[in-house]
Image (tube, rainbow, N blue to C red; front, side):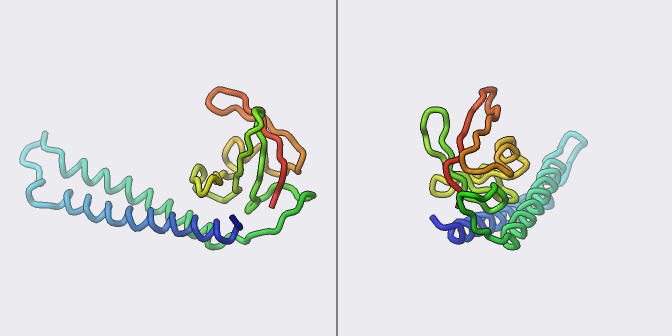
Length: 156
């Protein structure tokens, strides 16, 4: 998959998540303000609970807006076998079992998987280890209380 296609899919997924988030906020706000949910006693907290949920959803919505903006502003760089790992690198690694794994170094939304390419960020433990490395370098990172070793086999 080429990186421009990958970037387009990332933005589309984030925008879909944003739309779902807006719908959820509207539904939850409706619950919080519906006349049936007005507190009838100090123990009736359905409206208060819904308003807390809206608050959390609004924070997540703001995060999604930031993620979308960061990917829309992202410049796709060209990498070759002599380049260092930086943002927008498509990194192919081999783990200690010989399994080939592909990562895309993005600014945010780490963990998303698109067609067997996993997004990582410079803030993630693996992203921190890979950032600035070259093809042929090995990195070790503790994941799920297990030390994993990856060898960078290509960059694009």
